[in-house]
Image: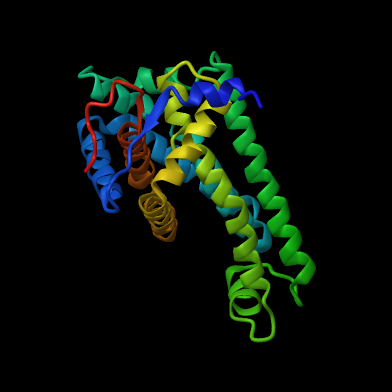
Length: 264
């Protein structure tokens, strides 16, 4: 059977196998990028914080919606980091990045980034609807605030609603993560198709299941930590993780024949 063009194009890029602890190096280099060029990142983090505050304001008394909205936010978060990939890319090339470089990445001139962002937005919206439907349908009482969610969903003795909610969220999040963990930085860095970037992302995950599982856990834990700090923690954490994600892409993907940094 003839291979799809996107699959063939994906094979033009090799994937590196990295050590289990390599995500810690990505975090260290992401923090270094943030220190070298802080303002674009902190403004992105502030925008994410304000967006989170808007979600809370709109769904304050409907926690069944709020829970899904915040977890949906995690799905679309890679799109919000697009401008910061550009900053890290400039730093990699020994250029002096400016806020204008980050803003330029948001201009809807690249249809690939627009389409991919819309697809992630649809995935996030789908999860919000699914999450809200699951909780409102199967919860024995209305869920209006965090205390209700904790008491009647998380700690319910005679219900598996919370476990079902987590399992359903994981079933959605895992393929989304595998599809975009390096896809967005790759689309920004190279003129390849969306499917090519997605296939390459899946190959990266299959070649590095341990390090990428750790990376997913770190992304989730640090984002939740930022949310728990009254959302203000997102101001430094969002750019930190965005810059680190660029270095994950740079470590994991290389054009075939140009791999000058093999891992042992």
